[in-house]
Image (cartoon, rainbow, N blue to C red; front, side, top):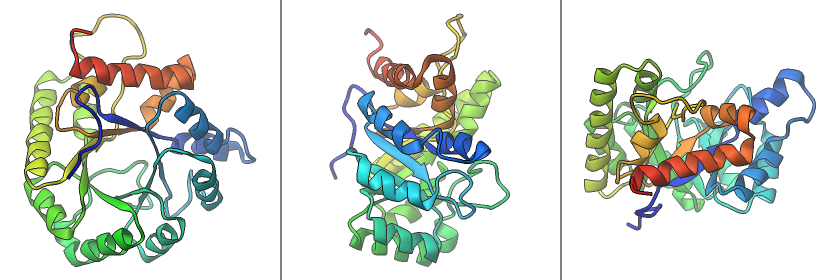
Length: 265
C-alpha cells in the first residue's frame, strides 16, 4: 500500500458542500460550488470533497456532473450506502469514494458508519465501487471493531471521524481533548497495522483570530499525527473563508498542517 500525503503534511481535501448550501438558501446559481472547487484547486487543494445527500440539501446531481467535467484533481464523492448512490457513483466514476452514514434529520454527519453491523452490505459496496475504478474509504469512528471490519470488507482506506475531538477543542476542554486525540491516534495506528490508508476529518478548524490561545488548532493537532494521510475539511474552512477569502483560507489550513508536522518552520 502506498499512502497519500508526505512526511511534511497530509493532503488537503476541501469540502465544498456549504458553498452549495449558501446557493440553495436563495435559489439560483450563485455562489457556484464548481467555481469554488476550481478556485480551491488553484489555491492548492489536493482533493475536492462533496457529499451528495438523499435530500440534495446542498450538492445536487448536476453539480456532480459539472465537477467531474471541470475539476482536475481527484474528486472524493461522499455518499450513503444505498442503491441509488451506488448506481450514481458507478456512472460518475470519481477517483475516490467515502461511504458515510446518513440520517435525513441530521444537521451534519453525527457518527461513523457501522461497518460491523452491516458488514455484508458494506463489503458488497466496496467490491462494486472498486470494480468501477474508485478508491473506497469508510468513514468510521476510532473503534477497533469498526477498523477491523473495514479491513475485512475490502476497503483500502478509512477516514476517522474527528468530530468529538473538534467539539472538545471548541469547548476548550483539555482533558477531553487529550483523551479523544489519544483515541484517534490509537485508531490510526491500528488502521495502518491492518494495511489501510488512514485519513481523518470532520469539524476541524483553525483559530479565526490572531489572539494567543492555550493550545494548537484542532487542524494542527490532528495533522501532527504522522499516520494521517489526508485531511478532509469543509464547514470550518468555508466559514474561515468568509473572513479571509477562499484562497487565503486554503493557504491557512495547509500551512497549519505543514507547521504541525514541522514545528521548527
